[in-house]
Length: 89
Image 1 (tube, rainbow, N blue to C red):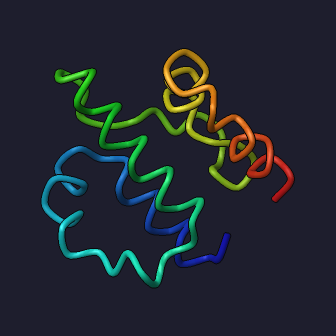
Image 2: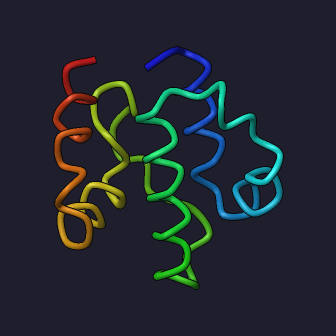
């Protein structure tokens, strides 16, 4: 995952930023893992309507935000491979 993708994910963990900027993102230029995570972010905010940000927990370079980890494990186990790959960054 490129540095720009990691920076984008750090910004987009806030509901307001995701809502305002998602439709303008150049999806064709983003890493596939970034696209999957952005989709997870959207689904997370859809499911947890009162949350205004995704808890980053540890650095996204060391692991995925802790809220997304829990969401993925419980809702989207088919994406666990991406979770494991991100830990090796």
